[in-house]
Image (cartoon, rainbow, N blue to C red; front, top):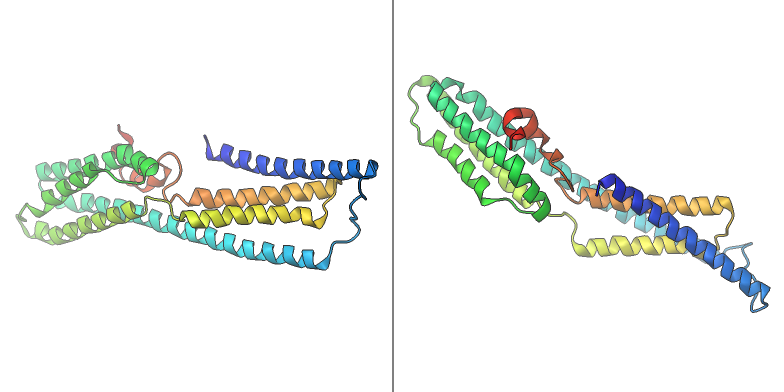
Length: 264
């Protein structure tokens, strides 16, 4: 299911639940008043203590929600920086290989292309679905490392390019390890329990303010619940550093290795 459909469904469901509960509550109160079983709820004034508690709970939850959004956003930014660093390191090796003989250069570039193709086409979906990398990717990167480290420089130009290329392989390997560490979700389960419970409490406090069935009150209640649903969706979406679907987070590989990243 598309992320946009998930968002629309979550916001619509939140609005529907709040509006239905509000209407049913008002109907129950009206029936009780008409039957003489009780008096209709006094909506003229809300106790100050309820207003204060509602305000404080809303402020505290807003702070917690803001911290959660900032945390998952920072984790996603760090993950994307690591992807760019890995792709750029491999691209730098490609460029520095120009000083090597044609056969060596083509062999090295072929090894890099095979690694990039495997990462984008096979490893990325596995990383998104199962939060782990494949051992095959590490093997292909080792082939790139061996192709550089095991060949002795034949002239001064190759000697000058040798150490920087070795360093770039180390940078790519380090970025790959960071990608493996960031493959899982950022927020632990206890945080999600707090966020969802806080959302239910915050929305539930709407009913303590004696909300009525006027269009204005129903509109505000629906918008408030939809906003909470949207913010929770935002946290859920950003909680996956490399996205929830597709390989859009591998754009750095697509930009620097157009043919290798696009082939199956």
